[in-house]
Image (cartoon, rainbow over all chains, first blue to last red; front, side):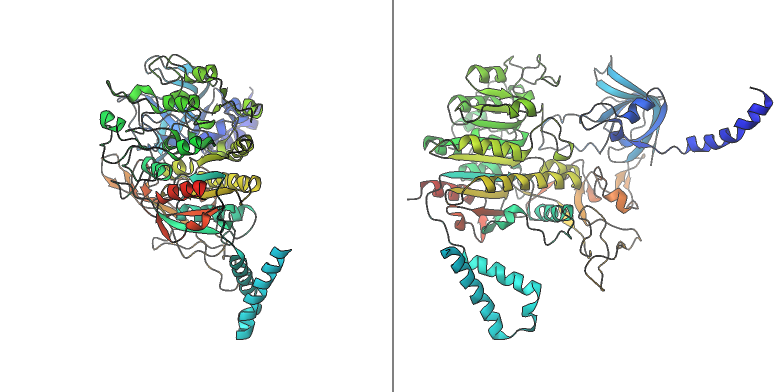
Length: 140
Length: 497
């Protein structure tokens, strides 16, 4: 890249940076088609760092970097059944650091690298189809 | 022709009364519509023949308030304001309010309410078709205190029996058609206490199919029929710890067993072989999310068509099981879409049956802690913001009403649940304020309504539900009744001389 070329792309870079910082989080449901196959949005974002809006399900394990992101608050209905099953449209999150638990009904935005494909957590045995790795999150 | 003459004469009589009074409002549409409705009511005659068939529709958690919300939603789906819409069940000629409390609960769960309708007596929360002299979970006492169900009575009369639910087929409402249990959670053997001789609910369903009591059973709940070492057609493991595959046992006993919409559509119905349809590992999907599964209306149609070949008649229990679950989530949108699917199934049953011989009953087992705000202008989306009334016209102003906090509010809130505006803070204290809200956010299908008391799951309530009916002896539904009287009307109708 010569100076002339650099100067020509600088305005674009300057524009791109704030745009990227302000990238609107997508909804978890946008990763899936109705038949639970991956959407084009998911396929396009694979391997990329993206923000996703959702809710932190009550963690399976204390002091862990792992939690499950749900599309709606994971209400536990005492009359639905003992041991409520997970919804189909969830996402496994592997955070950068030990997770500070957020209540199940407080919306959060998680930002991480999108991974697609079947994976079974070797420690928890948790099966996931889609994950955010190296993730950070914040209340919104 | 005679009927037309009668109807015409009733209308003339009703109109004549108001004309004689010379009321200035008599020419308005409101007035003439009401006259026509009154005339139709004057013509309604009770049907006192013996009921050949009985269809009991239950939308779980669809009390008067929830039903109201679904009415507005359905009307607004068709482009109307919503409140003047008439659901199929609301065209049935007879109705009553129903008291739903259980033996030991001011607020019931779905076990004793379904027992009330299927056995004619109230029971304790958590138990199904076991009398309330027994403590919940007491296997030994429960074995001696079971009821005889309406399905068993109907079967002894030579009638066929179908049970349909969009919840697990082993869930409380459908289970009350065929099972007796001192604990509604014993859907498979894994939770049965050691030494308990009571069979789990899934096992009881297969027994009742083998015994010829249950002819068709359609719903979710595959996991309770499969052993833990077996996965189903969608790769989900069973929950049985006794190694039994009840779907295989049903097949060996001559039943047709299906797992999805395609093999369901290919079923050979009406050949007298029992049918077991298990379309999900757990509950069937909400109507909004449904894929690869038949709709409630499709299951209703197939079952009525199949069982209509029995000249002795049938009893079918049909449940929209997930109106309740969406209410528990505080997610009104799925309440509404499952409620509309319920209404579509009722319309299908009305279309396929003759009121002279088929008693159709539409009710709910209990209500929820759903609540409605005012003062919303007409046409405010039932799942949206409460808009201002328009003093210059009919439809709302498009400007949301504001609370004293300066923020808009939705038409529907819940008294408790996941949408609570008070949330747990990082230091363990509880506080919060209402989030701001736009119409777009409120009408999002995944929106959870704001609620007052924080609970992980929104609760049932003890408020009345409605019952609507048509057909033989439907006129016995009037006033305010106990829920267990529904059984007694069904039982009377099929035995009436």
